[in-house]
Image 1 (tube, rainbow, N blue to C red):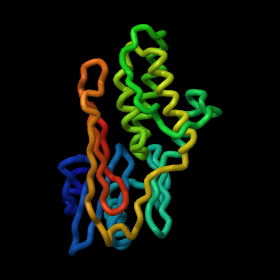
Image 2 (image 1 turned 60 degrees about the vertical axis):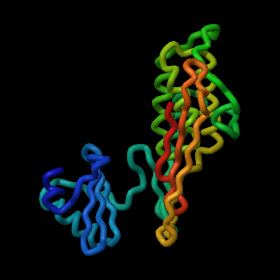
Image 3 (image 1 turned 90 degrees about the vertical axis):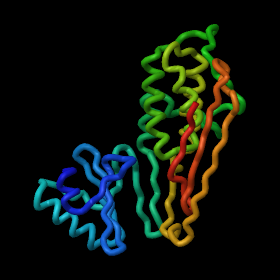
Amino acid sequence: MDSHLIQLGFSKSQSKATLYVKNINGESLVVSIYVDDMLVTGSKIELIQKFKYEMEKVFEMTDLGVMKYFLGMEVMQPNDGFFICQQKYMSDILHRFKMQDCKPVSTPISTGLKLGKDENAEKVDESIYRSLIGCLLYLTASKPNILFAVSLLSRFMYSTKETHLTAAKRVLRYIKGTNTLGIFFPASAGKTLKLVGYSDSDWGGCVEDSKSTSGYVFSLGSSFFSWSSTK
């Protein structure tokens, strides 16, 4: 697949090995590959149709049409832009951890909460906690507003205590009340593209080693496209 795309004139992204871009007379074609699935988009529908025809001559492929669901990500494509969310995935998480009937809260983490090893608290099943954190980490692909909380909770996947599990369940309660939210990329954003970035740090916020947690978020036009929260 890689050899064939290069032969067709695509260039591989330096930051993501499964992303390919081709520029033709000012027009663009973008292809992303995940195992045996492929996504393709471009600035002209004719370019996309020609690409699919070229690929079907070499590989046995099935055209599933306009993308609606991919790797747990739901994509809606109205005329005014793109909306990305993980509503079904969130519902599955809530049912998996028996939190589907929980009471929603307005924030994913309590204001000023400082989590540590908490030697005095009761231990809980670490396998359940790790599974929950893994699910939440994947959910951050469309919900940057839970990233700080999930990043903090992921530090306690070993020697997990009741306080850590309670904080993780709060994130699930927040998800319950915001399961219809996602990220919208308006079609008109290209006319007023402006790159804006924000960053912040809690300056020695970790109670265990006094290290800081730094975070950033970048927007292009009117939508976020890159975010992080890292100790």
